[in-house]
Length: 310
Ligand code: NAD
Image 1 (cartoon, protein in one colour):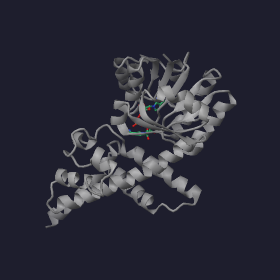
Image 2: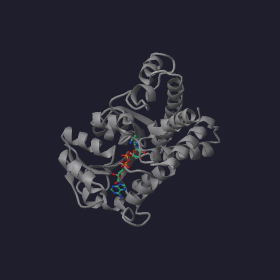
Image 3: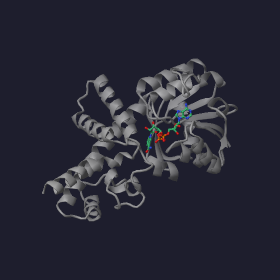
Image 4: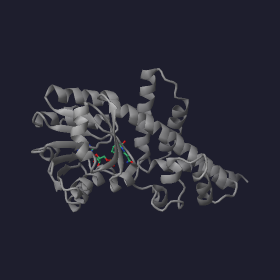
């Protein structure tokens, strides 16, 4: 049994913490949202009054926050307000292993990792892929940046939450790989939505078209595992009005990170840039808290407009 502190119990962190409890670990948790804490208690986690208490007496601490500013605020004490000024690194004894699973900018990951190292605390950036379904089933992919020895030390705990564990390289490499992945995800989700909308406008059943493309060369994760068309896939966010899942605003954040990375690398990313514009447009129509597969509505609106015009 490992004593684990877990901060950030949202769509992803909640089920991840529950899987750690299921695997027999002692998990102390904190989130700013009381309902998330209640769900974690029901899953067998130990709720605490604040982040500092959550990380006390722990061998290993995991954070699963929305973005870089939350991670810097939590670990370095940057910023102000209810999320600011925590400086949690200062509360940890040397030797503690910190695993940040949030998807954040490379610079923030490196800053927190280097600050941790200067205090003798081990840190890896370990963003995940696999969505809420993967977090719930314990089948996430972990993409890790940091020292190889720290990756190995984290492996038994990561294995309670995921099936595929990758060491991408040095500190920050996990975030770089994750950004490449999410840029590709945005592109194939938008492309899948576009193809489905075209077929439906020409009279095809979206489920039949999905089955055909799923067995053909157009097959991809968005089509096969996360179908954006309502009713095609019972367990996909599209079939529950895009609630839960991966919020559009988080995809917009990730595409912004990918664009910054491309600028840094002087790398041309025309498809990624287009996807970013599409998701920005969609987010602006709101609400941007719905799952990102709701991008299909950009195309479905056009369909409705055409019907009205006809
Ligand atoms: P979320 O918004 O549902 O959860 C984030 C949680 O962090 C919230 O519950 C929030 O209250 C909490 N939080 C923020 N600041 C805090 C603080 N100072 N102290 C305690 N709690 C705090 O987001 P999510 O969907 O769970 O995503 C989390 C991260 O994982 C993001 O970086 C996202 O990009 C990434 N991600 C999400 C998915 C997905 O499918 N949802 C998939 C892969 C990666």
